[in-house]
Length: 314
Image 1: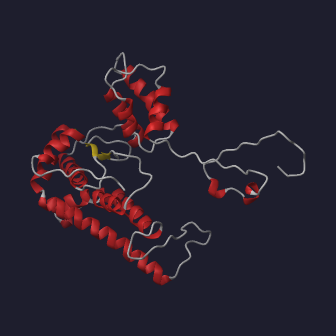
Image 2: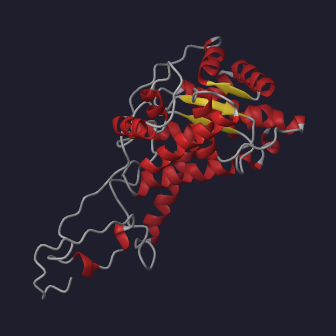
Image 3: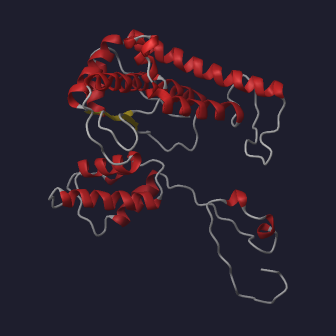
């Protein structure tokens, strides 16, 4: 590595998932000259990886590995291996001779959100959570640029008391401004539903995580990809002494983030107000069944309004 010894024929190979913090001395010419970036697998890659990890496992007839791969967007090879192992364990516990789709779905939920907890016993809380998740589902379903809703549940997982899952139609290597704005509105659908149903003074802390995600998306739009009134800028947020920009620009950034958040919330409120009957029925159905799949959600929403065709993210 010091460049003075004649070790011809010796190749040094190294791997890291934090290339941004490597010492510059390692990256000088003559040391690690070739860099190969290994990204997360796309849908075709995930399908091939799943096939590898299913070689010693029996899959029930009729299950499409391609459909499993589509639902696993963002998973690494290790995640996919873990998914198949968890699915096999669940199938064995349920005394099945082959892995079925419900085993894979439950394993996916466990990996993404954590272990399933006890069902909610408090009827008032259960009703509030039902409206919160129904609000998210309606906003996401009726926005053409939002990812489709895959499932929503009132069964606690990990630290979350209720959950709504989304299933991207395609890999998200490129995302449009319309899709990011739709996500902001979708995150705020639960808070909007609480306000419309229970009143401004009765909204709860249930939206805390949603608001954090809104800030993350809006801040990235403003400071990283130039999708706001601030203009075409990209600011390094991770410098040793913090971000380096003027107080005037900082004020503009804060205002632009607020504008994106407010715009998303108004969109969510409008959809909830215009579809109040749908919200009530969806929340009631979720309250009774505790878990609703994508087809069940679409069936209820389609009774009240036409569901727009989902548009590509880009």
